Length: 366
Image 1 (cartoon, rainbow, N blue to C red):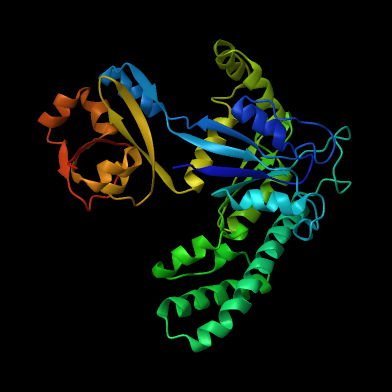
Image 2 (cartoon, rainbow, N blue to C red; image 1 turned 180 degrees about the horizontal axis):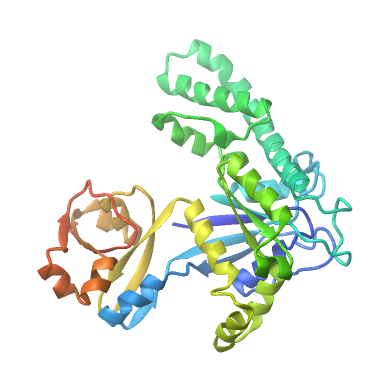
């Protein structure tokens, strides 16, 4: 599905360190602003224990997880919407993503400079959010002025619908409210999506805390960010990017032992990936056979033909039915034949809403 999360934040908050750990790549991480100029891109797998669990019973030749793409976008500064720093270029990079992972510095270290001179996560969030809103306001204002005259003279229902949604967004942005707060009708969602507004994207705030705070789970700064995220109907989590970078450098066989010694169940990055996946309102279904067990990504609320189309457009075009059962039934009953005997194996039509964890086989004819 080409899903992208853009990693943003002020300079020197730990974005590139986090990206390196996340993707096991080597984006430059340095103690000075704008060490990232062009966006670094990495594709990572979405951790899902169900893939291994299903494979225990199906015994495929291969396992293929689903993936999500992360883009490390250079640090923004106040005035970015007016071109400060390398602002306009970076804002364009954000427009091309589906969701925003906003890294917020929540640790104090005199050896790591802060672009504003001191650490204040809520102020830093406001700086980024303000720049995103100003950039949106500029583009929406131009669109509003262009369509306002046309809407008063045109009898085209589509033009009037577009004017209504543009005016709603324009009014909200002028009041300092992000586009995501605007309530739209079902037939207006596509128009809003096509506007590619920065503030319409869901946000995951990643609080970059010190190692001690991460292990204790106690950070006053991170708590403030969590409250801010909740007020915006967004998500937040704590992570120590330096620790994650160290974990990523270990051999796979050494990671489990290291995590156990630190009293951690799994790398914080696993949760970051899953939360990003959730942020995009996505679910996973599986196909399972002797050749491979594979995870597929679809939007929550997708119908069976749409899910089939993720595999191949012919599957959607010639969709007949979907044979499906849930992975929980397989794990409980140990085999597909047992699932069938228990009456848990179903044949579903075009209106079936795919559920997270479904195992599906599509019948089609083209």
